[in-house]
Length: 557
Image 1 (cartoon, rainbow, N blue to C red):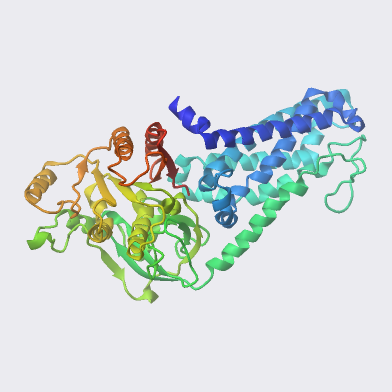
Image 2: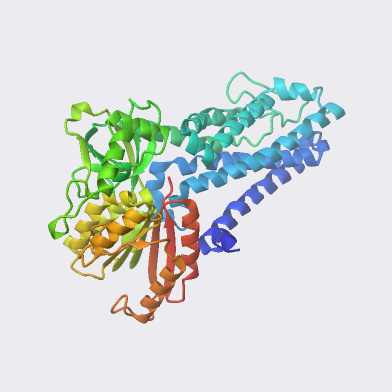
């Protein structure tokens, strides 16, 4: 019930669902009515419900064919995002792309089933001197229709998240069949099936039929425009990606996260955004999305990459950060020994290894972006709750650094408090982010502005437990993270976290000087697994009250 409420009944989703599903039903009804009341198509209307259904569903497919590419116009979305957030789910463009795909699949089944009935009835009634097999396999409508169905089967089956995780290449290459899918969609009506004559009235130039007797909706005149814009955008992205780019440094952190530092003078971005990366030596065609972990004030662009798939492992091998290097760094991090003044010898958890200094030894790299993400709006909330799970903490590296720089300039916008929560599965994963957190923590002039909460969810073995007990006794810093903030063990109680936060805000102690009559906005920005996102979102919305409004945003690639 909670899932239904968050997916369908929140104000923004309710508005979206009303407009989305309502527009589909309206288009279907218009297609049905236009066919049924057209006197010139009286002979075809003798087929009754099957032809009316096929025509209505066909027009809806034209509508979805228009919309399927709209969420993929990434550069257009980046421009319109600030002004269209109330209507268009710009931060959830992949989710929206899937909604269009689901609709496309449903109406394709309706359209195809109705046409199968149409073709059988045409042969049975001989309203036209043709057989069902002739329409299916010798006419453009039947040929393109079956090609479209085949492409959809290939694209949909490889787009499942389990297939993407196991073999991303299958998803990547089959999804590029979209080019042929769109060509088939634009030319589907060239067979002139909807006509007021027994024989098609074909001509020698595009669209290959005469409008004198062919009475289709000619929806290709509208659906083709997103395709043209998308094609133009891809050309622009290719030109932009070819601008001078150099991979200057590669750092390997404990747990195997690789940090790539890139120099590209023409690249301008905002904290919290993301980009695509291509390494031609690893794959000439694949582009992979990663969050930018540097701040705009840094003299380089950095990303952190975890080696979890074929492409990332191949990249690690090419950069010299293979399994042996990662294992050595991780073991050293776990065996770090304490020195005076709470410092660690070589092998401390914040250590990293720089694999190369000479740019000539590093592979050529191309980056495309930047693209917008919800986290870039963090300064619009009075209270920002930043939650990262594992490597999902990467967008907040950029955000926290940027907050640090803006604090120095005294330009924090509406932001008054920051709650940073990092849920990590194992201790070595703290390593690469530790140095940044130390710097941000030490730079705070207001101890209440930034609160760091780190949760370790792995089961603690006896050796680690003993090491923590020995090093923690009387120490000023946490033995795992070397922060003043102590590490908490186990999973966070999200209900308690949000309830306590609301109570503190309403009590007036959390935000001194807050007007009780004004509504406080608390934005939660999350990056991590979908299952955890649902749990956090439910508790955030459940904690909202008349004086405190909790909002939830999730990173999507």
